[in-house]
Image (cartoon, rainbow, N blue to C red; front, side):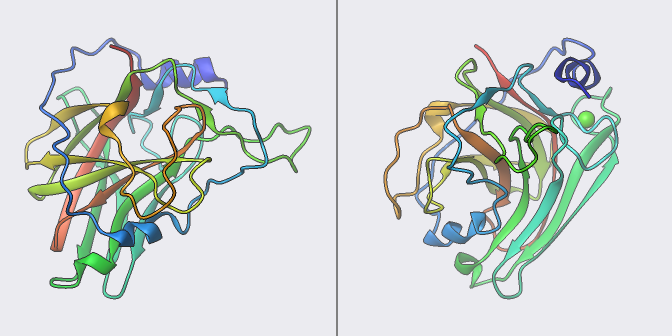
Length: 235
Ligand SMILES: [Ca+2]
């Protein structure tokens, strides 16, 4: 399916998105996020190229499947003892015209949540061309955008939105923190609100080699959250 077709499928209407306060950074995150990307689909540092994400759309989930707008699957992430996560596309979502969103259900053990990572992740890389399937996937250039917009609601608490970058090779990826409630809200996260945690090598953000997007719960115990309408936006 072409990029244009993805765009049409994903964004049939110019939605009157509301804004929500976003991204209050906390220093509570742990080094264990190092493991958050252990299963990353990403890396592919062998390719210096990157491909713009033409529409900015990542997923509205309106097609009802587990693939994002560039055909990569959303995957449940559960790292650490006693940690669980599962995902399912469900009816409803942000705005009453939404037919589907992605629901994430999981557990981070009480008192031991520092060693656990639970949530969902998807690659946004460009697949290698059919003519050269051995070539590495190509990261996305999102420099045409101002930040990432995502709609969320869930077990009230702090959640982590993570952008992985090919140039970050030690899992110290860029994280933004959001406070989520049980009511849907759209969070507009400028790229400046994403920061490395600091346990790895500092790598300046370029926006030229984004490989995946993830959402992790930063609270303990049982949680569930919904995500919808994920896209890179321009101010
Ligand atoms: Ca939706």
